[in-house]
Image (cartoon, rainbow, N blue to C red; front, side, top):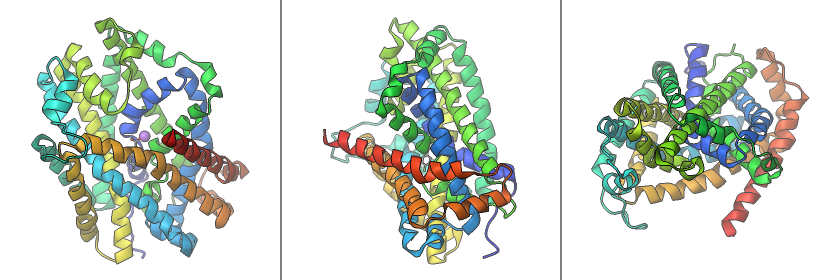
Length: 452
Ligand code: PFF
Ligand code: NA
């Protein structure tokens, strides 16, 4: 096993981990989540979640990958034979995400092109669901939509290309191109956004603290949920990526760098998005609260309208959607690598075969989201993944490791043997007590809202 693939450089690993973390969650999920859950006051639970769960779990996953040098299923198996299934659970969650995530990237590719002439005209929402997606009745698949299918194929070709070339020549190279480019593009967009008319109204709305939100349990659940999703934790990704680290690698420091880079990007996105929403509110004589939203609606319905009203619309529109494409591609590569590594080790096949089989299956399933019912289906699958898949995967992970295998102490020693920043007892408290309590409570909350 000593010929296991490795990252070429420490920076290569860090860029790949950041590439996985920085994604649609930063750009379209964080700004509205923060705004809805206390605005400026949200930063308190958010920072608390980052420090008590986000970074500690990142350290745990880096340690597991580095120590056992295997995909998630194999690493869990080495902790205890009965725990391999936790690795597979996380891999399956990632696999399911990789069937619809590329479809959103495909939309963004088309919208980068549409931006050049603001092809959505005066009714961006109507254009998106009607002209572009040709949305049909829920429940019926309807016909394949060519303008989604073609860019979707392009997304998979790019992903297969880099995944097929392996860790150092493929994944690392992709992230070395994508992430610095993304950072430059994003800076340009944010600077443009904050210098627009009305930007200050938007930022006011975003940062205005609603302190009473702090007393609301839902706000804390939202903060932890954002941190988990945003850091790609409990998706088998960070274990897989860390399994390609050379023996002499810092763990703790790398986790802090990844965590803070992701949060900085998130904060920057919040500023950019709300500055743009402030601009739109002023242009249309509305309040920021009337136009604020997140997710698909923000990117494909509200942003096109903002872009149309901006000076230099074509250029900035193109950059905005290009940033979604770059952020999305690097995340897609990371999710796909979880099952590629898993298949390779379980069935003892070459990387090429694992890419063809695992990626091929995901690509075929992704076609369902390129039909006229794609958006409805996407909403449903995403809802279950977000509310149950991820929270459960995280809960299984910490409970199995901290309570059943009782491995935290030995992992702490392992991390400390290679890292600059030593871990203390606080790390075991975060993972053994705080995180399981929060995740357990989160599951109950999600179930409760489901039945009411
Ligand atoms: N961490 C990514 C983001 O914040 O957008 C999203 C993500 C990527 C989630 C990959 C899950 C995943 F497997
Ligand atoms: Na993120």
